[in-house]
Length: 132
Image 1: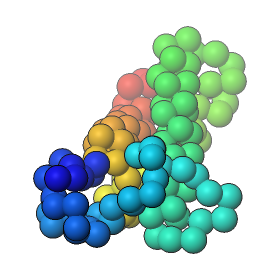
Image 2: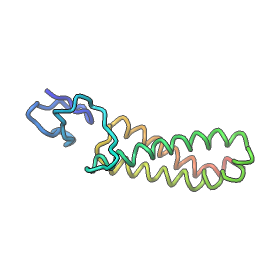
Image 3: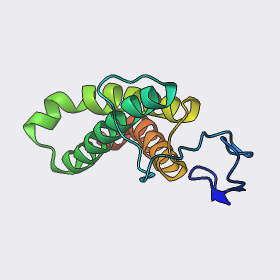
Image 4: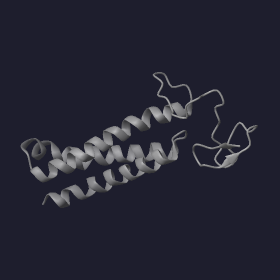
């Protein structure tokens, strides 16, 4: 029996795809970790090539905006509204759409990325109210 890395369902070894979610099993790959290709060839690779950098950028900008919001530094006073009110929600929407519509992402990563996307969107909407 092969356990699906995405949904966790037990499948027979003769199956090429999971019966529950349809994810393709790779027999010759010793590692279950997805790799990032410089030139993506499949839809799964394209999704990963968008989702991982979007997640990292969203997370870093969200943390920076959160920390700088308390210090009221000169840089944040000038650049903060554009970053927190426009860039962060747009990146959150892009991450949310990539993770919800794309395929080939691990279930745990997808859940974590959707949480970060939600926090980015809501944080961007609440930033003007919190700044006053």
